[in-house]
Length: 173
Image 1: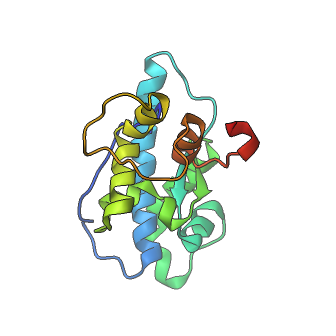
Image 2: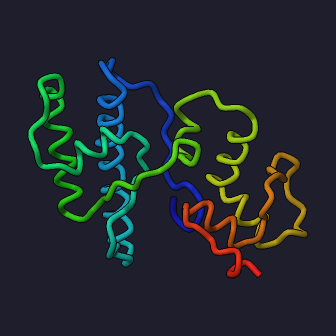
């Protein structure tokens, strides 16, 4: 995400069968760190070097523990050494950082499973920037496909939801 809209979205089947969800999350995390590294490089070449590491939302506690820990991997995870080590290196180089994210707030899940209408539409509108436009310009005529629901449609609340920050109710007044 950049300025409230997705700049890269991939939805594809994995090229291998993972023996566990942790393994699958580690493969995806490693692939994501490569994409983030490329985007950071491009943005830096455009004259906007990134000072802080890029947060990557993760809802699998085991995967987070493995990539953030320098300990050795267990017997069943040894084949993952290269991907895990490269991911750990990107974390240590302050290119990326894991961010504990609730499963229902992972916008990237839109590309991994069939979702009911409400989360699908909400994720879609966040990804393409409609949520921010709708919140900033509530009277603007939008496409009929733009999600109208939600109890808090102020610009600050939508921005906070997209950036997954908590908003103090006093700040929204």
